[in-house]
Image (cartoon, rainbow, N blue to C red; front, top):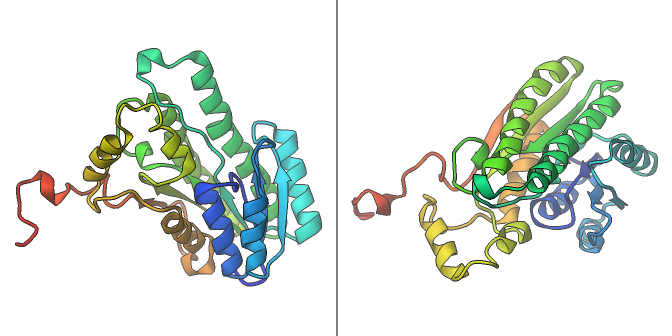
Length: 263
């Protein structure tokens, strides 16, 4: 990523924050985008600590005009954008019958429509140069079912499908589109979901036990996968969905099948 320009949405915390810092570590200048109410100072500090330029931009991804303006500003101040992590998103947890219209609309407008607007703008600025790489943030729950996440998975499943079609269309322009599908990752967004639990630690332990690796992932672990996909090291990855979930969606934890780990 040396001397390239990257743009990261949802960059104020969690996976977006870790990815912005990792892109800077690998040599990129980074435009860090987040909602107007979010603090981007840490993202700027982490990027700057690697000697790279950081540009904080407040934007609501639900506003397509604001998304376009953010890309225009990033290109004007940092240079042509080579790499984009399309990461802004929210989560809502509720049984299907208790999911409100507002919850569903918020998920669709931010996770899906917002991701579409960012993807579309990234394609527009990259097409004229016939190069670029885009990673959309999906989820392991786009590939498996879990109670309480019907509305959320609807948006993440759509992102995975959108990635496939965009990859097929844009590869002829020299633009690679892929997605990363994180598993249970210790982000502020996720940890907030445990606050209303009667016993958060017990719930965390229960979820950890469902992961073959036996623990939550860390944002940095997802960031490393994202930067790989954005880089030339993944030059033949097109329309790929890289699942980084500690084996949760593909492996049965050894403790759940009655087999000693000492075999």
